[in-house]
Image 1: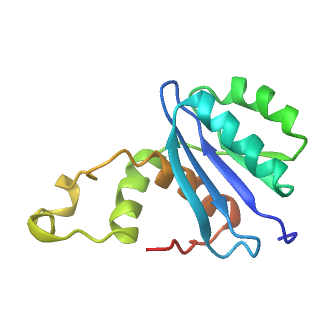
Image 2: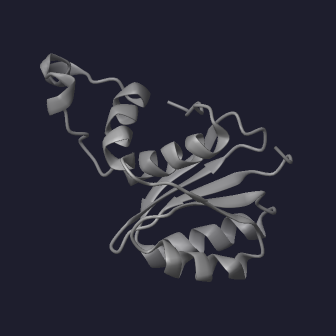
Length: 138
């Protein structure tokens, strides 16, 4: 990595997953689920506080419009295959946040995260790009 953080975006119509890596590329510094307008504002804020090494963008729904918009940030944009990422992110969610209480009793295939997990999808896209899992603060 270049010493600058990477951002990853899982674009959506009503909400987007967004993560920011640390400068070393070893972990996640911030993870958010935001409406599209707030996602754009957050990306601009991150870019203004220190240049991003790039933005990893899922190539699914809405990616073309986002790609055009992201060109205004002045950073590299990298498309990542998004196919199967929602299901994979559900599994990754439970790795990052192990189930507690009664959720532990459910078979893994029946567990649903208790919140929107678009940020985990964005993290998964970043991990696919880097080719390795990233740590996330508790």
